[in-house]
Image (cartoon, rainbow, N blue to C red; front, side, top):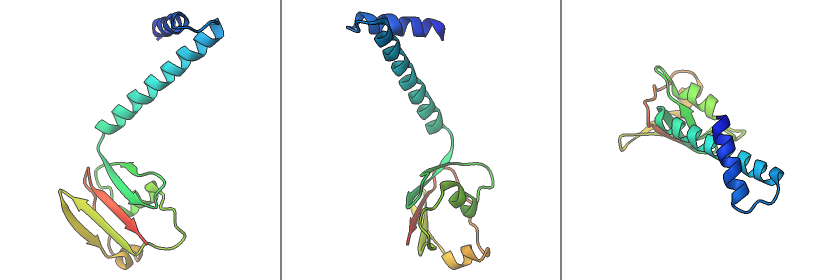
Length: 121
């Protein structure tokens, strides 16, 4: 890690930064961008379900036994009223969820990795 910072520092300095502080900032920026890219690639390899609609976190990590209710809570649905339409797309097939039964606790479909949940009001 230290060697990478030294290399980044030297590269930034030689590429036109006139001060050590400027080179240090550029090296830190490059290192931060590399860490972000590595984290993004790691997340893309982990199983997840995806949300479309008024959701704060469109990607929810999948785990065995993940139900729609738990996934919705994790994704943080943003509207103040209940959704009217919920669909799950799995392997190109669209499944409609009965929202009333879901809200009453009578239905909580189990999700699979790669499922796409559309939330509409």
